[in-house]
Length: 277
Image (cartoon, rainbow, N blue to C red; front, top):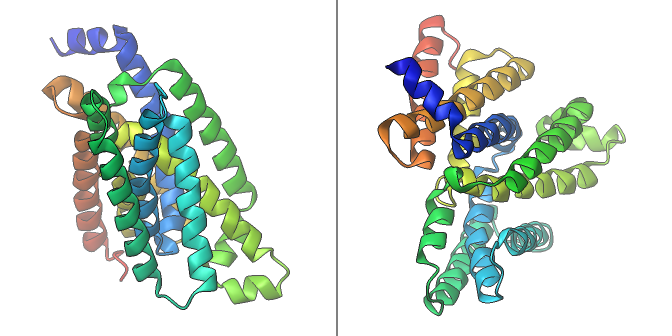
């Protein structure tokens, strides 16, 4: 019976696309998440994902049948505003993030309240709808995986130095500001394109939970990257398969698998004495 269910699942085109997208975006989010958590940018990524709501609303308001482009453009604008405010004002980072998050969400809600007939689409962006992903989304996810992974690994030493000791990196001639800008742009693309996988509300979980679980299992950064990517892959694929078997929403299932992996990694790390503060 189990084999028949697996064969039927893999024979469905929408499940094939869902599994392939999970194969791309799960490890990518987990890889980016290692640096997001190390830089304490979890709230930053959460602000970008919630700001995407206004981009989705503007896209539908302007007549786009697929609001991906307006969502990405608006999210990049939100990221730019966040960086500019952090560099040019004396406001604390958490204050800036809270102001921009609440403002962008309020704008999105106001625009959505004037629209009719988009409730189903908005629901999918809020909570994710990986089963509705098309081949174009899959190709975009694969390109993003290749480009971002190549960029991270080719600049791993410099990015690690910038993350751990930005002053030392600057004195060593590393272009700290440029690397930070490129990282923010890459993070924005990863967050916005992952919204179809998990939804605006849950997307940050795939950036944060696998790296946090990997931290309990690793002794250095390279081990954390490897474990994080592996856990992100297991969580995304496990969530998609679980949603099919239990007829449950895919995004929340991925998050639940992430949490199970986090608890297991934490207990294992505690047993081995590897849990770090």
